[in-house]
Image (cartoon, rainbow, N blue to C red; front, top):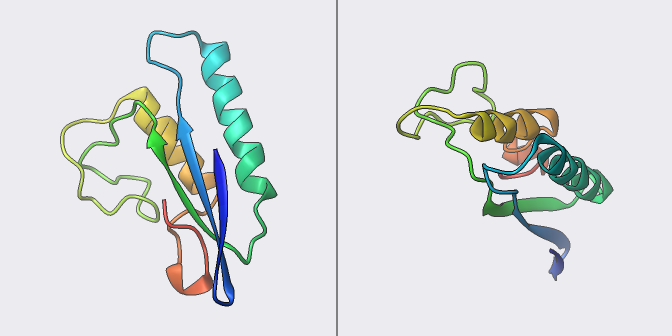
Length: 105
């Protein structure tokens, strides 16, 4: 689901997404990430983006390799869906630079 809000001079796009359950096949998971990729790419760069939902992933406590998108405040270990989430955030520059009107993930 996508919701676009006009707040004064700023347009904010909110995306709510729910990843396939862990037990589903790789094709369903790939279709989910491909679809989310299309949705995020369609949002104009100058808009703020908020993406939330249930991604069925554990990103873990370590931000190794994902310093731009992981604040290091997690706990436990990272699983494959968590790595997929971090890869997606890094690929789209999410939470990279709030002062540049980029996305908070």
